[in-house]
Image (tube, rainbow, N blue to C red; front, side, top):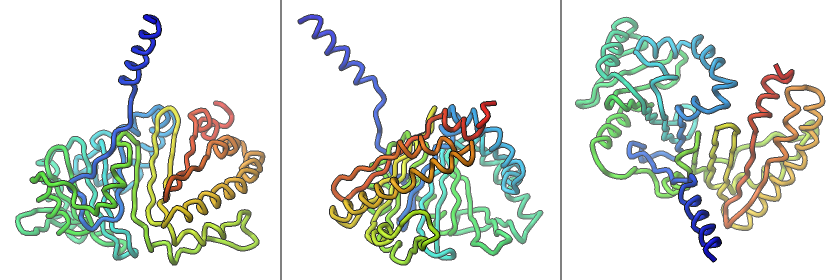
Length: 330
């Protein structure tokens, strides 16, 4: 009896000490109009085994050749060292109608950033300028490709915000000084709270009505049949994505459907799609050594449904990533 009790006690202690998922909380700076929230744990991703082993050097090389990296450097920012987390609240509409607010958390020098921004506005006034909205001073960047301008300002040494609308910046600054919860829609907030705050990346979106006019590719030349998915897309109301990067990459996508019946139909359609893709993955692996792990990856993909939600999960192991990056094993 004593031995059994000790085993039960040990199991209970292990259970208490084991890492558990903790619900994410919507950032109070998110705009009320948002229908989409994306959160990226930059520091966790950069510190993960897979990224350090296979991607960090390539990422540095890509950034070094970008104008954005040059601008950030002159502003005194190193995205790989100074930024810890990025959260985006967006209103997804047409190309010119979409709006967003980006919240970057990390380590910043407000005085240095303001001085660098002011110097840039004098150096290239056509693209960079200092503007005001009431008492708020912000930096405005006008892309050369005709896209909407970007406004940005520093909240403190731990937070910078940028967005497509200067009023949105002012509203976020006011929210930063208060203690009110995020003003986003309850449905969107509930989706965020279903996410694990320790995820490397999570994204949630209210998509009801947005897939009505989306047309998936079809026809005899396509190796898979997407007709069932095409019929179900308009009945999709929410989308959630979670990615965890460590020694492996685990991903989950949840589709919130109109009702339980369409959820079952969507699961069946996805199961059928997976069956169609499996032999294609095997053919691709036979043709290209880098693609050999695709078969293993597809085999990890599983579907499940509960009430109105359909979830698809999958895993890419670190070993398979290594085989795709270095198929020769070197």
